[in-house]
Structure formats: structure tokens, C-alpha cells
Amino acid sequence: MLAIYFISSFTIVALLCLAKNRKTIIALSAIFYTFQLYCAGDVALNHIGETQLNFFTFDNLGALCFALLTVVSALTFYHSIRYLDTETPSQFRLYNQLLILLCSAITATYFANNLAVTWILIEATTIFAAGLIYHRRDQKSLEATWKYIFVCSTGIAIAYLGILLMSSAAIDGELSYKALASAIKSGNMLYMKIAFIFILVGYSSKMEIFPLYTVGVDANLVCPTPASALISSGLVNAGFIAIFRVFMLYKETPIFPWISNVLIVAGVASLFIGVLYLRQTNNYKRMLSYSTVENMGIVAIGLGIGGYGVYAAILHIVAHTLIKSGMFFQISQVGKKYGTYRINRINDYLKYCHIGGIAIIAGAIFLLAFPPSGLFVSELMIVRQIVILEKWWLLIVMVLMLCIAMYGVLNQVIKLSYTESKRKTTDYKIDIIGVCLSFALILSACILGIWQPEWFVEFINAILNMYEV
Image: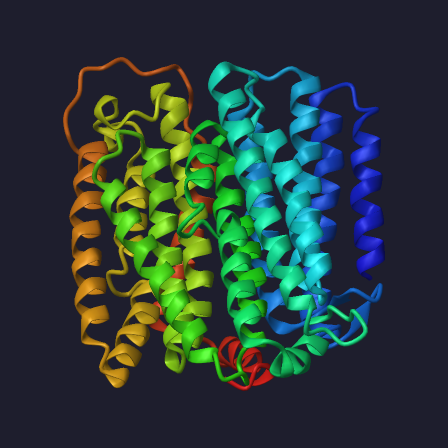
């Protein structure tokens, strides 16, 4: 099935080269997202536990993130049609080709069962994402693209050093995660510590946590906003999976507590940085990007503390994907209407779109983990685990940072929605269907805060059971 998925994506990308008008481009792209939806359902229902093409294994974590990617990428495609309404057919064609290739690379990353293959695919996402970042072909996008390529490639090189150190413990050069889980127990523990740090630093550019978080923030600033939604959710989840799989390799080693503390430190640093810049930025896209840094910091803390925290980290990923992508889609409408994303130039959005304004307010509230947001449940579980472990310093830091984030985000969103303004807007007609679809994403995360279906809980528990958490 995976081979058919890759062949179909490459075939559609090739056929798009022949497309001469927007209707043909839209039709061919729609075929891909429809087939991707079928594949996501087929994987979850029929193929869990299967290994295909030697280097890819369908597991619950990959299937969960693949399902989220399917929804977000399809809506990214839908919103891009209106957002890129002034593009030439050639520009629109290239954008959709890169979007499809990025989805394919992310999907492969989700299911890769080999450390080296994951590394290769992570680099592939850099190439395709860079093309989307450079879409505008201006000075700012060029600068952001080069920065993205340079920082991500540097991170990949650092991660490669970590893989080399970890391979010193590999038996017969076998770098599958299954083989490494047993092999590193007998490896040099100093090498294994350094290897984890290198891999964490290298992949932090994708998960958007400390220390290489800045590259994602700058990329989202210049990237077409619908594509930013995909980068801040689907691609971030790929970084999470890459780090998660390596982290769990250390589960049975004597240095696991040390590794966990490293992840907690990275999470706290990300949380602090994200909250600090949330209040200082004057751009809504940057604000949402720093919110990603903040939330991924919380995810890292959840993994580091273990116990309930691991379940909470996965739940947090799901809820964050739904809310953050929904918020980016809403902000794309705002940007088209006002012709800018500058916070001090956007006011009184409720005047132009009541449901859009309500969606942004609700999204901000749920993104800040107010109940009944799914993020509230995940953060509450993390706090519970922190209390059980009696890490009081961590509890104080986390609660303080979250309170500051609440003030910063709500202050800006209230200005956007309510503050009266006499500034002129563009003639762009807001897409109500798009607004409603993205609002539905946000509300679905709210449902997870109220009720988690039994199959959903079992799906996450299956992930934890696989790693014996």
C-alpha cells in the first residue's frame, strides 16, 4: 500500500508539470488528497503492525499522525486555492507540487523504522519545505529560505554525528529501532548520552524546540499562511516522532533518568522562550509560531517526566495540531482581508466576519488550554505527574509561564477582534466555508477535552504498550 501511495504522489507531481491552467492543477491535486484520505483510513483499520518496503512499519503513533496530516493537508490545499488567487498557473502548480512532495516525505518519516532512513527523510522535508518558504521570490523569503536550509542542514549534520555514535553500539550495523533498543544497552553510556544530545539538537529544528526553534518561526513568517499551518502541525509532528522514537530506545538503559532530565531542560527552555516572545512580537504569524515553540516545550516536558506525562504528550500533539492549524487557516483570512499580519494594524475583525472573529477568540482560548480544550486535559495530566514526582520547581515554572502566555495572547486577540479601527481593508471577500471548516478543527480539539472516545484512548494506550510505558 505504501508503495502505491508513493507512486501515486510522484505520478501526480509529474502530471502537474503538464497542467496549463488552475482547474487542471486543482483537479489533479484533489485526487492526491482524496487518495491520501483513503490511505490513512486503510492504514489505521487494516495495516497496523505491518512492515512494507523493509524500512517502514505501520504503528499506532505513525497512523495517528498520518490521520492528522491527511486532514490538515487537505484543508491546506483548500485554503491555498483562495489564498493564492493572484498567482500565475506556473507558480500555483509549483506550490502544489511541493505541497504534495512535502506530505509524502512527512508520511514516510512517520512510518520509518530505521534511524538512518528517518534521518534521510527529515532532510527531504527540508528541501520541499524550503521551496514553499521561497514561494514569494522576494528578499525576505530568500533570506528565510537560506536560513531554513542552513540551520536545518546544520541540525541534520549534528544529528548525523549522534547517529554515528549510536551506531557504535549497533550489531552488524543494523540501525532499525527494534535492533537498537537491545543493542544500546551494552553500548558505551557516555557515547549514548552524547548521541542523544546531538540527535535532540539536530531534530529540534523540526519539532521547533530549543535550541534550533528559530528556523521554524522565520519560515512561517514568509511562507504562504495555509502552508504554515502544515509546517506547524504535520512537519512538527514528524520532528516529534523522530525524537520520540530515539528517546524510547533508552527506556531500559541505566541513563534513562539522565536522558529524561535533558528533555525536561529542553522543554523548559522552549516554554520560556516561546512565552517570552509571544508578548514581544508584532506579527500574528510569529505569535502563532512562538505558541508552537511553547506547546512543543510542554510536550517535551511531558515525555521527560514519564508516567501520565507520556500519554499527555501524545494527546497534546493531537489537540495542538487541530487548534494550531485551525488558527493559521483563520489568520490567513485575516491577512488577506487586511493585507498585513501586523498586530498594530489589524482591528475590529468581528465587524467583517462574525464567525471568523468568534473562531479566532475560541481558538486562542483553547490554544491557551482553557477548559474544555483538549490541551487543558493534557496539561492537567502533566501537572498531575509533576506533583506525583514532587518536582515543585518545575510546577512553579510551568504554571508561571502559562499565566504569562495567557495574558500575552488574549491581549492581542482581543485587539484583533474588538478594538475599533478606521483603517482601510482590501476588497477580499472572506471565505465563509473555509472559516467554518477551520472552526470545526478548533472545536474538534474542544470535544477531546470533554469526551475522548474509547477507540481513541485505546489507540494511544497501544502506543504506550508498545514501548511499555
